[in-house]
Length: 301
View 1 (cartoon, helix red, strand yellow):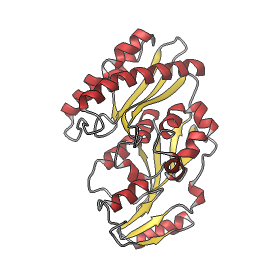
View 2 (cartoon, rainbow, N blue to C red):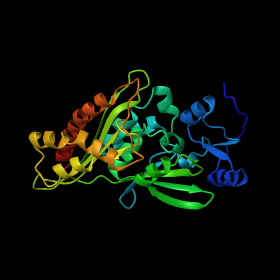
View 3 (tube, rainbow, N blue to C red):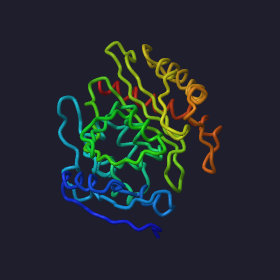
């Protein structure tokens, strides 16, 4: 049961949705909505008006890459992303992340542009977007703008932020030769939430050296975190098994140092898994993700 009363509209065009947001100042956007509906049932959210984007077909689908960007429509389902042949071939980290979200019903109804879902930040997709250098193209009452994944995560950390922007698309840089990506996660067997997940983007040069690398964890800390010490340790090196293991061994120390430096960041510990267990798994999953991404980069080169 939802203990709050609200009005509801399901416009069929983006312009109509924007008009509704302008008319109803406290409206919230229903873009898939599993997270928002759950929050409403628990009394954590009480919108007076819901704008359902489910009928706006222009926001759905994965289009042909343009100008070095692959746009994924904001109302594309997780399942569509996970099954797309181009995504599976060129962006395996993205496919691996979304195919593990929830159960089949959630994957067939949840949408990649559901900004309310990003507020929880136990979010595989946020980690992958950060690792792959994705951006979020949005439109709202104030007009159009483009947010990097890092900027979006910073917004989600603001407790008073109420997402009233419509995600037009998630834009991923087109994968080039020598680039490999991977996402590995340990999931709770009932909820499928990531107890610990690690997304990796790596680029190998023609002389078999890691020229660039991004490593992002989720589930260990209160928001997705780039493991810059791990990235620095592997960049400029030949990615041997020993070097990958040495770099991955820095993951736990990297996370703890970041927590000490950022007041907004905390180490997670709950009934699912202790902080000690999560940090130990962080090392393991960083090694697995790095190894897999490096192998894929070799195949792509």
